[in-house]
Image (cartoon, rainbow, N blue to C red):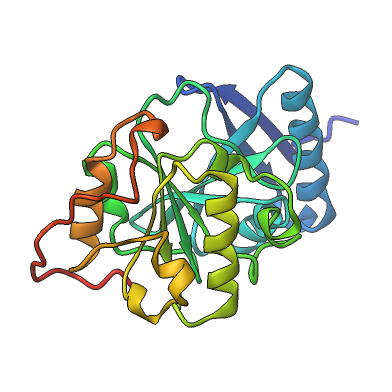
Length: 243
């Protein structure tokens, strides 16, 4: 009848140089709701079928519906920049892994939220950073607390725990990470507030976020090089608080 048609939604991905996929989903305003999730699930399935482990996406922080879709599918934050967050979701399982071709040292940050003040400094120092918001805010909780491996812990060169050192969940995370990968240092501040058995297995870095980045930058690319039992502690300097 000559009436023009227009797409109501589209989705796709392109393979990135780091081995992950770069995801994009667009849905017409009047069709938002079920369609976005449907398209995302189809793209995730296709990526999984061709062997991609993760999909990444850049999303405006104000785009709460899209962020909710991605967080429902296990998203972790990789980078924040001018109102935009880059996240990664797994194509299989509940936690993404490190991008397979990203050869930078892997720094996992456990934080009760989604931001860490040392994020920019860590990236400038050459680290690949993944920020996990903790079991309280993750759909499905934390696999390590359920006795299952976490791909981010498995591939990490260091773990920075930015949480209340007196919180029992913090204690459980530290204990689980150490039991899973005792060769990977767990870096905290205020370790004196931890139970004695945990204070003995973590690295307590004085100062602020820049000092933490300085310490983990000396760990090296091979997790077997890390030695939390005999760390070289940086001198305490004024700096922004890790929390």
